[in-house]
Amino acid sequence: MGIYRDSRVTRRCIIQLTNTLYVFSDNVLIETLAQIKKRIYNRDFYNRDLEVRATKILHKIEIDFEKAVESRLLKVEGIATKHSLEKIIYTDIVSPNEIDLLVLKANKLFVVECKNFLFKSDYKIIRSEVNRFKGEFSKKLNNKIQFVERNLAVILSNEFGIKEPNCENYEVEGLFVTNNFSISSSYEGVPYRSLNYTNVQGFFQQI
Image 1 (cartoon, rainbow, N blue to C red):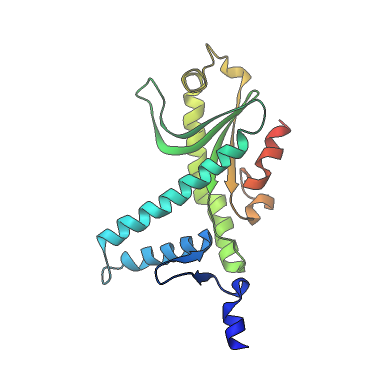
Image 2: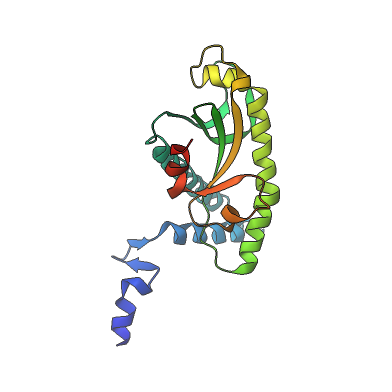
């Protein structure tokens, strides 16, 4: 019975296939890397090479999620996107923070912040996440929105090919997109709308 239980796939988060090959979910990888980063930032265990490698893997996971969101959005008719905006093309205008996605649909330009979070079940962690959405995350998103609003004409022209746009006809909005369920999507205290990535197509189809 013990061998049977140990071999059941649904009860194990890491499955060993060979001596050097393992299968596990991206959530397990993210959590593991997060804990490794906490340890290597401790001066008693600091390892520069390990820090760089862990940071690169985490960054790739984040970029892959942003691309997955963009791929879903591009299936909606009438949408145009710009991924990872740091500097407006053909200018020297640089965003103070990288913008994950700009999404243009009709006369609305969305500044999208992608959050690749682990699923939360502990109420203390959920409360902390909501507070970050209300504070830190919304503040950063607001700064990006202000940057877009200040440079709206050149963004519409250079990034989306709209010649001589009348900025008064366009609205700029902020949007969070998460990979797992987040209580922020139903919490009224968060300044900006939050969607699970599985719902982004339906949301933009209604615009």
